[in-house]
Image (tube, rainbow, N blue to C red):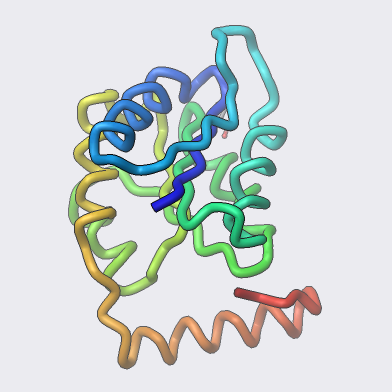
Length: 153
Ligand code: RB5
C-alpha cells in the first residue's frame, strides 16, 4: 500500500517513528515533510498528504502536529477525506471499523512516538465493517457534495 505521511515540527518525532513502522511493514511511504525542527505551518503539510489521498495518488495518509487538531481540520477540507484524530487503540481501531478513516491523525505532544506506532498498527490491522457504517459514510458523502459540490471519493 502507498501511504503518505506528513507533520509539522510538533509531530516530527511521531512522523519519523511512523515512517519506520510503515517501511518495516513493506509499505511504499511518501514523506511529505517537514524534515527539520524549525517551526512550520501545519496546513502546508496537511495539504500535501490530504491532496494525495483525495486524488488517489496515495491509498492512505498519516498526519501529525502538536495536538493533531490542526491537521484534522485541514485534512477534512479535502473531498473524500475521512481524517480521524485518535489518542488510544480503541479509537484507532474504530476509526477503521466504523468510519473507514483514510487518514489517521496523531498529536506529537499528546502521544509518544511508541504509542503513535501502536495506534497506526491498530488502524492498519483493523477492517472496515461496511453495512450500516457504509450507509452512514454515504450520508457524509452526500453532505459533502451538498456543502462543497465536491466529487467525494
Ligand atoms: C504548533 O505550535 C501547533 O499549533 C501545531 O503543531 C498543532 O498543534 C496545531 O493544531
